Amino acid sequence: MKFMNTLLTLCVCAVFSSGTAAFAQQENDGHLLQITRVEVKIGHTSKFREGMQAWMSCYIDNDGTNTWSVWNNVDGRAGVFHLVSVMENWAALDSPDPAGRECWSVIEEEVAPHVSSVTTTHARHMPDWSGDADGYEVVRLHQFRAAGNGRKFRETVGEITTILKDAEYDHLGSWYGVVGGDSRRPNYFVVEHFDNFAAMDEDRTGAYRALLDAAGEERGEALWEQFGDSLRDDWEYSSELLRRVDELSREESD
Image 1 (cartoon, rainbow, N blue to C red):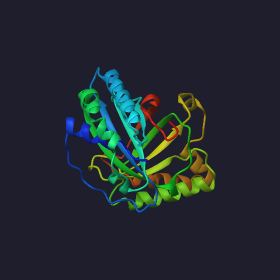
Image 2: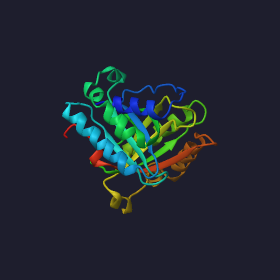
Image 3: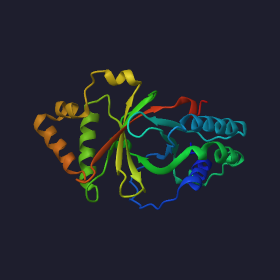
Image 4: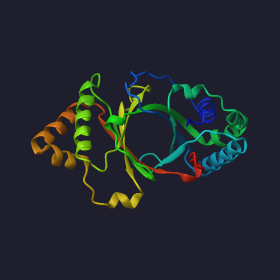
């Protein structure tokens, strides 16, 4: 699967341009995510959704094959959408998209006028650190900036997630290492999954408590402190709560 390259290119051309600073690519065989964060103008959300639905109809009518999911911020800035697609490798970006070109005018006329900014991030899945999840409608992104070259962060998270996997912890999230971007963005993030918002009310054991139970209080506390020390002091952590927007998403079964 790959992202709607035409949508990305057209929105970028319509509303902004910016430079990027590269981070080293993670040495991992996991798939790639392409995440485009779209900020919609205040009061334009309904028009943006209508425009996206018109584009999707055009794309499907023209036998477009790309798939994606769309997520909307629940907290933080209003009117933020995350358009996410999965790529097995970078070569996916070379594939032509005739349907996207055919529907270019729909994006230009019905989507781009309602968008204030677009930012794109690529991230590589880190399966050795990650658990399994599917069928979820709500996610919380926990985002981190690692201190120095990130070695201490990787060593610590690797040890923590190994302990949690060996303990068969049920709620281990999906970890990603960010590839590219600028120095103000996170280097890593973990996706915490929930079936729905009601699932967030459930009294489930968090990673910290699970670590203490599995490794013992002394070792668990030391690792947790080591994890905190591996983060940058100026901007170490942030989180976002997102819900899936079904009517703007297109999966392989659709």
